[in-house]
Length: 82
Image 1 (cartoon, rainbow, N blue to C red):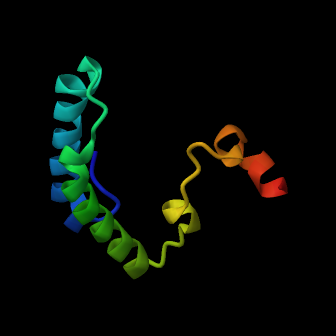
Image 2 (image 1 turned 180 degrees about the vertical axis):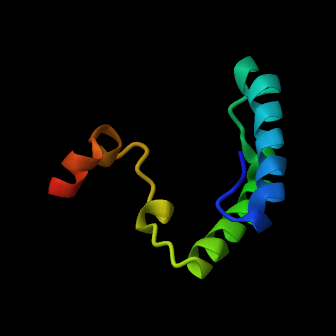
């Protein structure tokens, strides 16, 4: 699958490959440390943010962390009503 911006597709493919390797060779064997792919993810994320800005795509939730919070367990409809 291509990225939201063509200029980010190569970065996405590199990150996806790293993630797949980490997941199958480390995570499934009990190693939860995902730092191996973090540098690729940061570069890919920067590319996405730049592309979204250029295309005037507002995605306010991109920087919010919902894991471990009440919002993680709510549907989008419930989150908007809160």
